Length: 270
Image 1: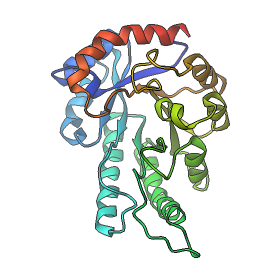
Image 2 (image 1 turned 120 degrees about the vertical axis):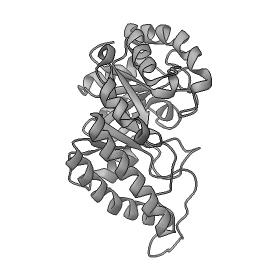
Image 3 (image 1 turned 90 degrees about the horizontal axis):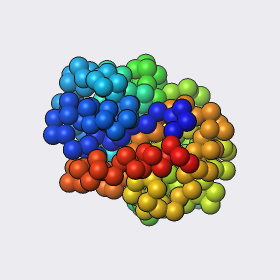
Image 4 (image 1 turned 180 degrees about the vertical axis):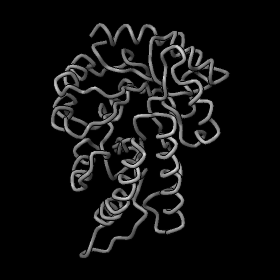
């Protein structure tokens, strides 16, 4: 599939051991694995040891749904920041390119202080302040931090690529970029290729799933157009399969192993 680097989230591989997952990824013809930050501390040494097995390496770390960055409770915010800082540090240790994180899920938790600030204005200001330190830490660890917008059913805050790009452009650092997740984009971007081209300078990572969260080729997303746009902007980063129930896919991992070859063939053909 062109020159894109393909990876897959760890729970989409049946294992049962981490070495098995590296070999299964190699058998599929993908070259990276996206790991979850919550289980990463216990896996770090083995990931370092296994990197390169079958030509497969740690591509990226996904912070998933953990503590809340935009909670009124400073202890909760500090917990969230500590978790992400640890994920960034460990990403550097395992040689991953970067860390994915979603700043906030669902409704606002901060108060409406109008006319001073609305909840969204407060959230963006707080998030900008947090991102400065996080981006600096990412830079020191040799990795990127990727802010992921998600669909309007899952958040009110950063829904489209433009939302995320407008947030990070005020922070002058090369370590801070955004995620283009084709599942979320199918729900909220009126024109996926145009959005990709418009955010060419800020896209650092891509998630692969069809419009129904199934494997590419099983929904209505125009992957030829999306991949063509990524070609146009000369995107050279990782593209990670993130389908089904991210982080909870072990129960379907054997099915993914069965169906992924057809999906990969489809992606290579468009």
